Image (tube, rainbow, N blue to C red):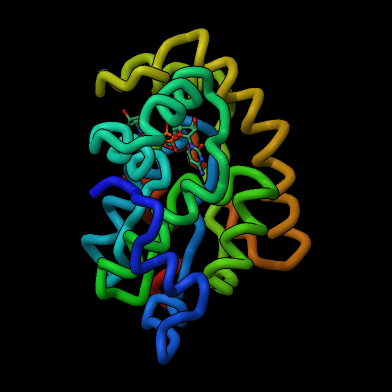
Amino acid sequence: MALIMETPVDALIKGEHESPPRWKKSTVVFVLGGPGSGKGTQCANLVKHFSYTHFSAGDLLRAEIKSGSQFGAMIQSMIVDGRIVPSEITVKLLCKAMEESGNDKFLIDGFPRNEENRIVFENVANIEPAFVLFFDCPEEELERRIMSRNQGREDDNIETIKKRFKVFVESTLPIISYYESKGKLRKINAAKPSEEVFEAVKVLFAS
Ligand SMILES: Nc1ncnc2c1ncn2[C@@H]1O[C@H](COP(=O)(O)OP(=O)(O)OP(=O)(O)O)[C@@H](O)[C@H]1O
Ligand SMILES: Nc1ccn([C@@H]2O[C@H](COP(=O)(O)O)[C@@H](O)[C@H]2O)c(=O)n1
Ligand SMILES: [Mg+2]
């Protein structure tokens, strides 16, 4: 369902609920990495083995466009241009998805993408991630993967890919450094074959 001006999540954000909702006490793992680094692929593997629910911020934004939302055109033009959508929209979509899931363990993929994302989520959800997965992979490999992905994504073209790389370096790498300084970063060599990457990831969830 499209975002409307007032949703149950707005009430939660304003603290109008009698008791804190379950998702506000959730375990959250942020999953970061350059475009095409395998975030979605590895989250899909993880949910088969562990009782987490996976939400991709990019997928939620694409679903919002499809839903006919009043924000659809704006979100679409920002995605095509590789830019980061205003955090209020993305955080609201994430909180709504967590609220509706009924689970209390989440893999949040492609988020936070910049400092604004991080701060708005912290303020609204009041959740610190248990840890942050970082899929590290050279740009040439990322470009190869995206150009052969064939999922019909409007941002999987060479012009947008270059912009997404620039945004990743300028806005997301500082977030990765921030979590590293807090001892929360778990860096994975994502240039290896998918099965090997999963072996390294699995260990982090087994304890
Ligand atoms: N370790 C790997 N080795 C080779 N190809 C991979 C690997 N992991 C994922 N891929 C492939 O690379 C492409 C991108 O993977 P995926 O969609 O999981 O990346 P992503 O990080 O979610 O990207 P985006 O940020 O653009 O959503 C897919 O076609 C996927 O099948
Ligand atoms: N926190 C986010 C996440 C994504 N976006 C926008 O969606 C595009 C695709 O994201 P993927 O994770 O699926 O690659 C991304 O390039 C941004 O335009 C966002 O704004 N904020
Ligand atoms: Mg993805």
